[in-house]
Image (cartoon, rainbow, N blue to C red; front, side, top):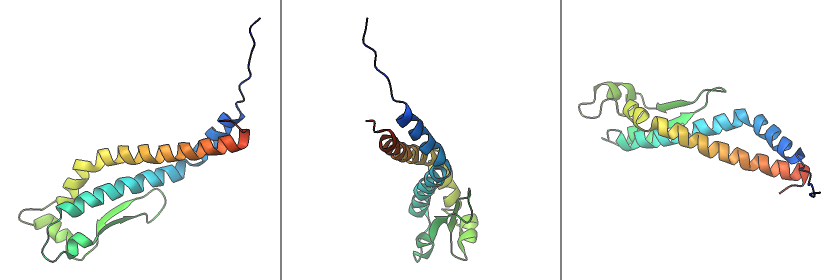
Length: 128
């Protein structure tokens, strides 16, 4: 008769519970990473006269589940709408790098969460 081995699934269960509990934080981290990549691209493309507009790009989270990307200077909207050669630079950056930035942000955030969940599973079940 073949020797059998039992698989201790407690560590797997603990890792899944930890991962599920991290979903809101993972979403927020993925959105922040994506926003940072998009804002960086928009800053690169922004028209420059004094440098103030380029320096005022950013992102924040005014409430849970929302990520706001902006150029925070009083004339940003007018320049975005009417600049002779760079009109729409921010929207163009979002369209150009946004989908890839979201995928990469999600990949990184999920990988980090999985590492934390695996560590919690190992701690709970003593597994590898």
